[in-house]
Amino acid sequence: MSKADSARLSIASGEKVRLRSNYGEAVLPVEITDKVKTGELFASFHDPAVFLNYATGPTRPFYAGPEFKVTAVCIEKLDSQISSN
Image (tube, rainbow, N blue to C red; front, side, top):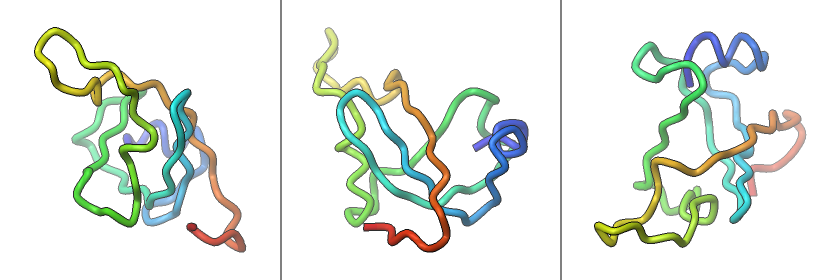
């Protein structure tokens, strides 16, 4: 997440958030970086505990790959008392 987005949403690095899309949701920790543009997010699919695929759409464009790069999400800051599961 960009520094500007994290400041606007009052989210600290390492804090867990819930990403919600029209397709599902995933809970994961935030990393604040200059490598991500404001208004955009990046997340790795390599952690099976996160189930990030649940938040991405089923659409397969012309090149037959999933539309990971165009899934709109809402970021929900989790209360520190809420479990990540």
